[in-house]
Amino acid sequence: MQRLIMLQALKGQLIASVQALPDEPLHGPETMVKMAGAVLEGGAKALRVQSAADIRAVKSAFPDIPVIGLIKQDYSDSEIFITPTKKEVTAIIAAGADMVALDMTGRARPSNEKVEELVALAHVAGRQVMADIATYEQGITAQSLGADCISTTLSGYTPDTQHRGDTPDFALIRRLSQTLTVPVIAEGRIWTPEQLGQVLSAGAYTAVVGSAITRPQLIAKRFSHAMASYTETV
Image (cartoon, rainbow, N blue to C red):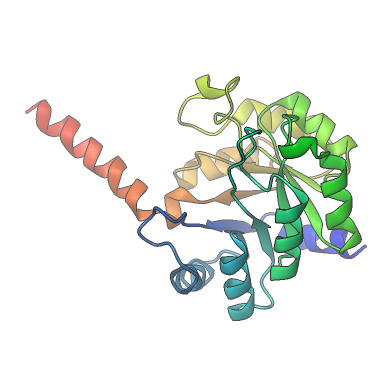
């Protein structure tokens, strides 16, 4: 019941992804706490946060704000990057996240761990599970495996979906929303408020916006590319 209540509170509310990897300029818990404060001041109602250190810092600073936790970790025997194993799930729970985001694309996990075990681990601890998927079939499977909500996070970022361009996957959002009984969260390549409106019109329960808000190096790159394109034509 507690898991259901949290999801109900997020319907139609902006979730901001507040992340910076070790090779990015804003990396570090102190900076992520400041970024979290800024997006909350701007109206975000929940946060998606990467790494145990950042989750712990953000949750400590904003204890009443729902946090979706994930850990990005490379393993040599798996393509999965987002919360690959029970080790990461356990760390996310210990750091205080309210929800655990998992890659549920069906690809082999490190040491052949089973995603069902990761979902169960989160649920036993009273945490919700957000399934990060890339295709319709993966969304259907993730729901059947117990995910509390389905996010289109990985559409465009897996080998079989890399052709999907630089806009949100409206078709996937629409199809999943018409089929699934758990909430469908739009995430990935939402660059403008207009696109946010479009994913909601497509049936999304709510949306996660990240790079367009919290990764200034990518925002600046879009403007610098536009500047270069313009100056080449004049």
